[in-house]
Length: 121
Length: 111
Image (tube, rainbow over all chains, first blue to last red; front, side):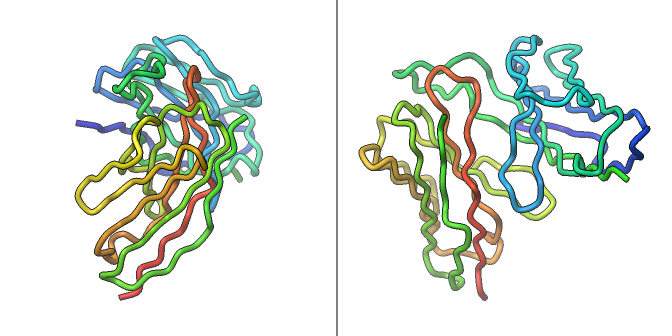
């Protein structure tokens, strides 16, 4: 089972709303990721959690607030978003840990959810 | 940082082979991945190759890696209409817990 579940599938929100995106995996993975993807562009990394601690923040504006309550769950809290934040938000998970040069097991193979299509009005 | 480039568009006839190309800049990249994205969906991992390999075959998919030229390709044999999608290559740099995605290649399969 390589399933990563994201909810909701679609979300429409106003600029003054507060909403949350959720992501869940039951593969025992210890790294989880949030990406933002605009149309016809590759995914852009936002945050990485490793062993439930924030390990990478790609200079994301504070109106996006990640949370990792436990190793299976990842949330993205949204507040005071702008219309340009409208995009597909993707969650991914991987086994975790750094792969050495000789290691055959790709611990950072990322498995993606189907995404949340967010529209900010 | 790593830079990963792909051609934007490829059109093939059903039943032909497709070859999607990718170049990357960081020679320390350890793993290279191919993902498929259908409209409105997430990314589906197709295959990956470790940097000390030069070829990997998985059913209709063949990955070739030229580490000297930092060139990666994905060959899809007997391409079907269901293969129509955007294909992303991605490179993982040694010591980093993230991958850099290419610009994506839109594959159009003509019946």
